[in-house]
Amino acid sequence: MKQINRNSSVMIALSLSVLLTACTSTKEAAPTTTTPAPNTTAPTAPATDNKPADPLGKYSPTIEVSTIRSIDASYKFAAGESLDKNIWTPIMENELGIKVKNLWVVDGSQFSQKLNVTLASGELPDFMAVDRVVMQRLIDSNLVEDMTTIYDKYATPFTKEALLKDGGAALKSVTVNGKLMGIPQMFENNGVASASMVWIRTDWMKKLGLAEPKTMEDVLNIATAFAKNDPDGNGKADTIGLGISKDLFKESNNGVTPASLIGLFNAYHAYPTFWVKDASGKLVYGSVQPEMKPALEKLQQLYKDGVIDKEFSVKPWKKVGEDAAAGKLGMAFGYVADATTFFKDNRKNDPKADWQAYPILSADSKPVILQANDAATTFFVVKKGSKNPEAVVKLLNLYNKHYFQTDYSKSKNPFVIDTATSIFPAKYFPVLINPVDLNINAHLKVAEEVKNKGDGSKLDFPASLHFGRVDAFRKGDDSMWFSERTFGPEGAFAVIATYMKNKNYQFNAFTGAPTATMVEKDATLQKIQNEMVTKVIMGAAPISDFDKFVAEWKSLGGDAIEKEVNDYYNKNK
Image (tube, helix red, strand yellow):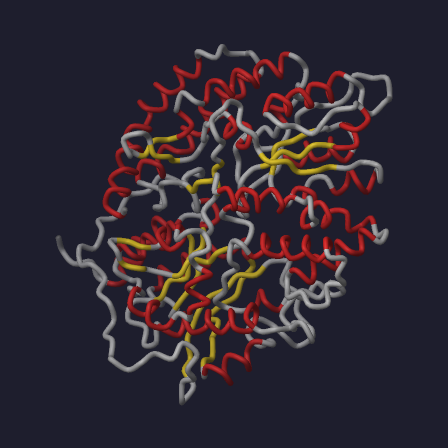
């Protein structure tokens, strides 16, 4: 195959980069494009020497490394500060001898367009954060540095441990042909923290004399009671037992959205929009497996019985949240942050309203295994041939040193969020990760401090922040209810901690970029899937239509996708 020159390969990457925010999982389709012929020359490891590496060693003279950045409304700056000059700038220069030059900084909504222009120009920065699709195209075009030896040599023990908090899934997802082609940017509410749970309005449970659920049947019986037994006491049949979003299985850029049905399907050992291994070790698509049918059958009965909102098929999750805020909703399957994003307004409007998260329970005697999102959907990649590729790893080490490893128990951590101004300096750093157990561990420390009646003075961040909020709630500040229900002793992270302890969760078995047929066909396949599920739930189609959907899915591209997925898996496992 003829060697592809540098600019041509960048143009290839451009033609396939599409919208970055829409291509970070197999659940979302990209526009139809022409797949490039990959460069057949495998990336080679950079030259190494035998000098012992210093993971936090300072360059002399100072070096400059370039990158590109995006910001959004959550980025607040003190007067005179920006991403180009802030609290971290002198730390990077004084401690590492590194000056980071931002070639450009744009709002996140313009990032993909601006990146396309950069890719087309052929003038790539020394490093950048990209999604899985762009990363794979750059790898295929031999434009990304192999970081295998560099990472092993320069990453501190803390950095290595932090990147293994998900069991190595994130690192595996960026390993191609046995070579580490980037650094995964972990987020604390991905990984096991993204697994589903069920939120139940507990003041209604108490009013109706209902016990806490021990089985999935108990959960659905509670939902039925909420719909039938007038828990709001107004004498009208106007309450919703189980809230469902029209998007059914949709996941946001943060990994999750409330009122999803993923948790309910997991209870029946079904894994919609998720790749799992079958008994033979082959990867299969969860949405077309027979385990889907019992869950569909139960949902159809719940809808027929009036437990599910008759208008769910036209309501996005925010509309379901409005039902909760209006005091009309009693239950929803959701995620760890829902007390803040979904139920907070209900509590604000009605101080007697109370919600609690419960773990997903199995629908039968088999143990439940929950699907969890990848710990990383963004990756730091280094341009092939960069003079100092190890600088990215050293920057990450520096971030971890100051943000996680420094003892701030006797002083204020200068990088944490200032609640008065919403300034959050940690966000400014150009290379960062947040281990997937960060918030789980914070919850455990908060729970222990509450149990021991401590004052939180010896807690590190972020436990110190969350303890302060939980303590404020317990002393009468009801505006901190959301934190009690998230980080308190019986908060949502207690559910996640249980999942982590029991190891009853799994990651998507397919970790590659969308395949060629996914790019072309996935939007259509997702559409027919959601139409089938919606019609079956509403009773507009029989359960047997699931089998018709499976046949249609396979013939319209599913079989080809399955082959591509398994080819990738077998090559990279």
